[in-house]
Amino acid sequence: QIAIDVRHVTKVFGFGPDKVHALKDVSVAIRENEFFTLLGPSGCGKTTLLRLIAGFDFPTDGEILLHGQDIAPLPPYKRPVNTVFQSYALFPHLTVAQNIAFGLEMLGRPRAEIDARVSQMLTLVRMEELRNRSTAQISGGQQQRVALARALAPQPKVLLLDEPLSALDFKLRKEMQIELKRLQHETGITFIFVTHDQEEALTMSDRIAVMSAGNILQVGSPKDIYDRPAVRFVADFIGETNFLEAAMVSSTKDRASVRLGSGAVIDASVPKGFSPSGKVTVVIRPEHARLADDGGELSGRLANIVYFGTDTHFHVDLDGGGSFIVRQQNTRDESRRAQEGDKVSIVVGTGAAQVLRD
Ligand code: ADP
Ligand code: MG
Image (cartoon, rainbow, N blue to C red; front, side, top):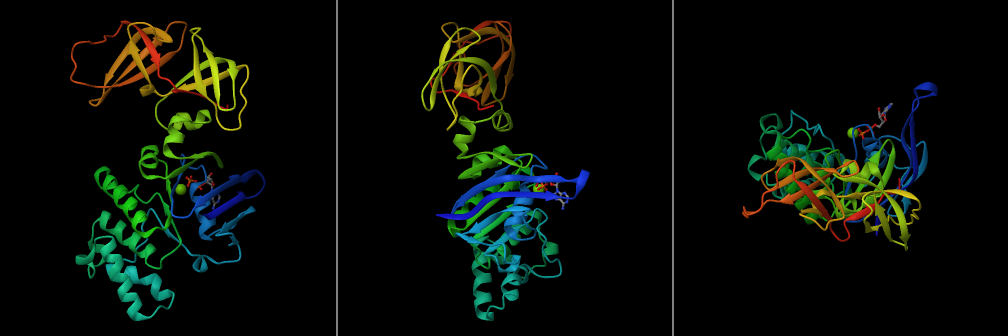
């Protein structure tokens, strides 16, 4: 079931030489009851897309459907959509409970219903004891909870969250990530969450859309996006990775054999709908390869070893040029220690390699 269907949406700001193409023919279908994340660097168009869905602004071209219905004629307050902003935008002169009641009062709901709903929301975000506190006298994390409760109170079908955790410190952000997942799960509301933090996107989302310069480059589950990036930008933006030039040997619909610079032929997967030929680039995640004494598909010399506690990163200068990072989990096994300068072989795991579309 599709909740929000964004169809060929373009947004242009300004005129003439000052024109900014904030969104370029963007299409994406967001399902009911999913935690969907828009991920991309600052300026790529995330907020613009949320504002169009919320109705604070209009597309230059294209349409947005909610449960199959064009929402263009609906002003923001008539859309079953609510927004949580990075700045929270709470009313400082009102109490916690009054802030949460605000939207319901605007909708003219009966007093008894409002009171019941406010209590329910206070329980949901675990703020019962602070209901009569002024929002000027609560912490940043508590303000964040009130903002969430206020946005959820009118029972929107879709909740838009524009970098809601970016103002919180690291520990509180981690806590609120779990809290947000729980809220989405318990309410069953579709969440469209915006972040520029790839780790946050990977840990929280059912699906992720990776954006760059007004385009959606790839949509998929966190595992798809991480293991099977379709294009270089996605591979690069989501974590550390290795790029290798290779030549196509043969291919079927979604698999390929490619020859690496070392001469070794490995198996690789291919993005959907793409028919690679000639020279290609493959990506291999650092933890999908391992070091060996010999017998690997690649060989080189250990240039650098970086210890990270849970794992170690081995930077290898490849024979024949280029470099490669291998990430290995640390164990208590002290018997074998690689050292900088050692000659090493690199074994690429089965199914580790992915051919890029560009
Ligand atoms: P993000 O939220 O991903 O950081 P935005 O959607 O805010 O990106 O912005 C996308 C692009 O559109 C940027 O280049 C930004 O400067 C431009 N932009 C956004 N809003 C306006 C506006 N009201 N007028 C002109 N340009 C805008
Ligand atoms: Mg933004």
